[in-house]
Image (cartoon, rainbow, N blue to C red):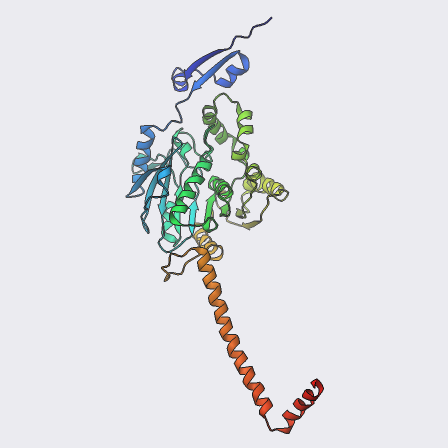
Length: 407
């Protein structure tokens, strides 16, 4: 009789790294009978992360509000001014830059993509949180949110992480819950939310629009399949994910979180696919080959398919994958909001919800139409009376004949 002895040893992964050991748990698991319980402190919310976030956000906004998740719904946020928001949720720090409108019940959310980790500004290295297009809030009357990926706190070399999160928590799922609470607070309906992003921010936008049902999405040169991205970037990402998913090798991780890596898998899991407006630079062969074509092949066969508008444009630039011209993009978002989202007029200061507004608008149209019809009806009645009372033989003779027929 063979007796298999399993030894469980608790090891701090930070200690392992400091000692210079190059092996990893998955290799030990494969080639030995020893099981290791890795105590990973990498993803704990530390004072260092909070300090780094404070320092970086102070460079963007004058005021930062710090809340726990359950405090969001009842908090009184400032209106018509830019502020930072740090939300502690599931032992993770989520950072957002926000401006809520007092007159407009639309919301634009700008996603975060890849960021250089060696950028020096005013003699200092830029540190996370990293936001894309936070300054665009001044171009829109709508409420505006820019959000950052907390994964970039955990590794200095990581440029993009698509909000993948850890074994217990998907950062995009948690972020979607935070945005929902903010919308409740401001009485913003989900069908008045527009998620916008490019590249990795486009992936986040599609995922959030899937998780927040009835919201809308506008993307540019987006990813849909993370595993089709550049290999060197994925290698850096998985170096972090091996710690986030203790005890699992690459294939096991991919299988466990396939809905976090592939929007088609997410559509299936959520049984929902948002209507997507997708702008693609025809010069970007890489996007078309690895993202556009695979996405189009799969999306049209999906039972959850809810509509897709693909617009090809041409911008010749050094890196064709880069976002569309800023002025064109801002104009495009404004036009989208005007056509597809609910807007209050500048002079309207009502706090009525969308349904009342739309119903009231419809009733006004009907009432105006009724007034016009009443006037026309009055005119026709008068003309009819004139005909009946006329003494002219040419008019009355045919009328008498008609009367006799009906009698």
